[in-house]
Length: 467
Image 1 (tube, helix red, strand yellow):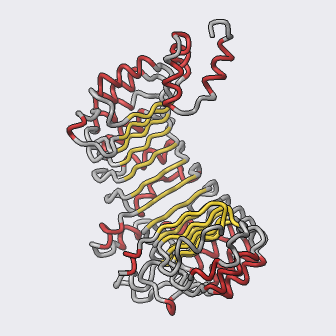
Image 2 (cartoon, one colour):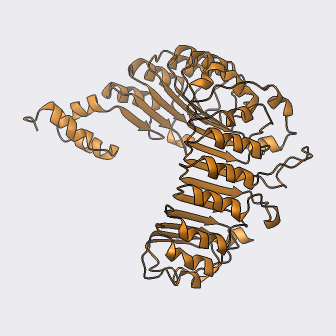
Image 3 (cartoon, helix red, strand yellow):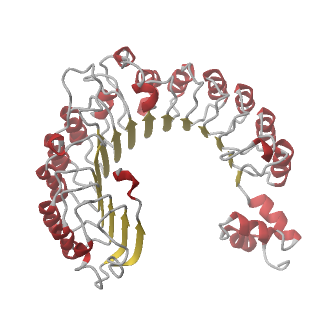
């Protein structure tokens, strides 16, 4: 090893991906130990960091070129030793001059003071906080004031972040490209308007409201009404995910849906108030769309205060079929309270998307309108590679037997489908057409019946969902 040039040794170390293997290699000789210390740029630690601050100091001294650090205390108990606290973030900021990406998960001892220490990390561009209850909006504001190159910010279950001045400050910086706010109870749809000029730079937005917290209250229409009708510069948005949001006609997030001309992926999950006009406008602007996921609320999950229940129809799907000619992934789901007669999408609407777009992955959950006729139509789906059917009770053995005629299908997943029995797999057994067949919680299907129906088989039977 002593005779090998440094560049070659660095190349060897670079191909060792697993941390446990890197640790073993570094103990082989002094030279490998030193080169590994210089080359290691990422570090992930957790409950084993004990005593936390002392161990973190040692790690920072050994690996001076760290750029990415993840600290997670998932599953932590007091008997595992004290967690890292604000002093630990002071150690990071003082010993990791190249730190650019930091993730803190379940760090319950971190407070605003720790974020103030991080504000001195001038190269920090990505910060992800997952369940850090000691942090408030003041701490985040102090951090974004110091870290003016922040492009990625994720806040997940940060329950005490109530003020949003930091959001307005980030908007003025115009550096943010990836924003994720999930289940932060004090932050609502109306607060997103504070992003201001940063909307123009934003490429990825994930916004999720805590459904349990929201549904315990009366719908706060004022929070949405604060966001008046206006032009939102979000032409660079590539990925948009909205969960449990209120979509108010002509304002708020409805303004965003019709402006994302570079959108490639959209996920709308239980968003109340989405209209056909919103999806049509989205489809007409987003010709680059490659993935769409819609989980539609049932009539029974809509708030009682809304006199006219809103429901997406085939008009939305036909607009997608006509305009989104690069669409590869389609996921459609109805909430658990949906009944067959209430389904908003018909078979014709779903098939229009499949027949006009190069769909490679199709997932249907609780879609009662999809039946054996729909399975027959998939026999002409030249691009379909993955099919997932969950609680699609109108599909029978006859429909499943048609899978052997699907041109390119290689992955099939079935879950909670009541109408399919062992007989449905007769044409698949021995053909090995499928690379993967996964069957979960289907009461009339046995593990014996699917043996030999694919190169790889996954089977699980838990019928508790039926009772």
